[in-house]
Amino acid sequence: MFGSDRSELRQMYVDAWRKYCAGELMSPLESQIAQVIQDHPEYQPAMTAETLDESYTAEGGQTNPFLHMGLHLALREQLATNRPAGIADVFESLQNKIGDRHTAEHQALDCLAEILWVAQNNNTAPDEQAYLDSLRRLAG
Image (cartoon, rainbow, N blue to C red; front, side):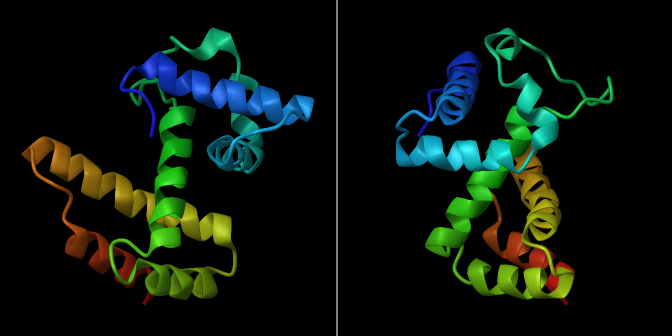
């Protein structure tokens, strides 16, 4: 979907946001990116060329806006395709429990980020069942 280069990935966000703000024609992916940026006004100031090489560190108390929004895009793709199987129903239960889609997404993102972190550290594929179980516990 994106290039493997961090600057290239970030440039897609910057370009999508610029196009959205200018009212320019956007691809479906750019529209999805712009929607996630719209949902995060706190990150909108970071959507400039000057942020392409910015380092965001947890030690510095910073959230990487590109990573955070990328997780939103990943979750939304999972929900649209119901992959892993069953995630759409589990997420719907979570959203109904919380009453707000964006807040439900943030809770689900914590589960997704943890599963990805474990997979990366173990050099394995993400454990879809553990991911769904984690989401079910939230929705329960």
